Length: 247
Length: 117
Image (cartoon, rainbow over all chains, first blue to last red; front, top):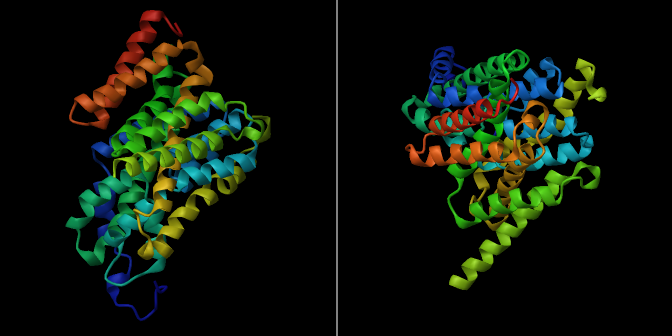
């Protein structure tokens, strides 16, 4: 991949009209679900006393709710910052294959590294699902701008939801306040089931959840690290043995 | 939370602990994506670890809840999530249906138990 060169034809440039179309495309059912989950994240921020400005920034910059919840929840439970960075890094690995798979649909006629990096920043589960649904219908030269518009639209809606959730949390009556906070584990659980296709996925879900209470209170706040790496590695090898035996 | 009383410290943490270790994977995906074999053993392991990590996050949110969730009995927290997954599977694999089912179970349960009133 070459960086953008100044002689590139207009095909690789940013196009405002496609950007706006993409932003409009973000108002959809998946966009609503995303909004609900970020309402829950705003509630979590309020619940643990995380400053709202930094919380909004985390939605824009991290743009991956599992990583945000790991970071905010970990800080609240007193985990060490290096341990949290490791856990965030591990949770982000799943973004790479998503970017790789979606990138061919987000490139214009000519590669433009900056537009690609910005478009890739917005890749997360919702963008991945919506990108595959919407981008094939967009003219090739407008795809980078459309993808960035779609991502920016989703991010702005999510930031508004984060802010609203934060301020609702303190004023909602009891049952609704807990409903707000439970949005995060609910949406994560459904996402896990939706993405599980093979035996190894179900094993990883089961082992990761089962190991979590066993490694709780691990020194250094590394419990997520151990249940993730331990559970995932176990699931990986068990699935391999299984396949080898069947073959 | 004493560490993060100041907004600036929290912003710094968001960038260094959250943004950078997460964003690196997106950048790598753009730079080296073309040569990547999605079905290699390495990628399969990476996906398994990411899945287990997310499951552990869910388990921890349910087992060691924070704030207002503490008021709910453990069985209601888990029951609501299980109901959400069931709603998702039964209603055309719709995420929205799953979320609404779980929330309905949770709010009904919390109201019946008189939580937070």
